[in-house]
Length: 202
Image 1 (cartoon, one colour):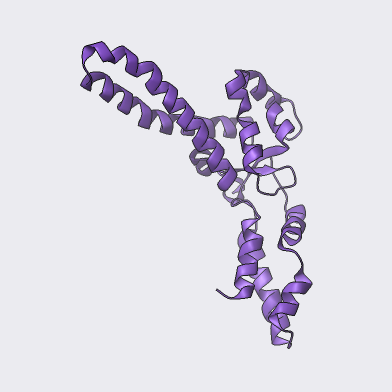
Image 2 (image 1 turned 60 degrees about the vertical axis):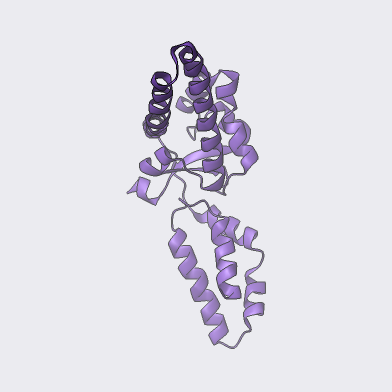
């Protein structure tokens, strides 16, 4: 991989995977770099002129229109996630229930579903921090981003899931019905939002 390709990859990695015009941004950067190098400028000088990858990524994000996901789209994405998790956890717990001796069966249900729940939350946190999407959000064409449009951090992803642990999930969700950008209460706190990707707007 050339230095220019590495630079472009670095810029793209700072953009959420569902960022509209992501492919066009990559093409534009390659075109600018190639044009300036064909004019005789060294690659290092061209990349220096383009500046810090994070600042360049932020400048692109400011020009990208972000469409808030609707409450219905978000609910459908969550149903897909919960359904997929249930399709994995329920058969495992039921299988253990019937395979284990009778005296141990009652000890399988609670811990089994408890571990499944924790595993689900860990999956959501990591998936949103790394890709901006869970399976459900990918299916519905949605992505989690910072309010600026940048990719969220692991810490922000954790804060987004705190309502589940504090058992205030439904109160948190109701905020999405009344806030300007359809943000939950803990999304306002974490400065994140859920928006539509190119596929979600199509």
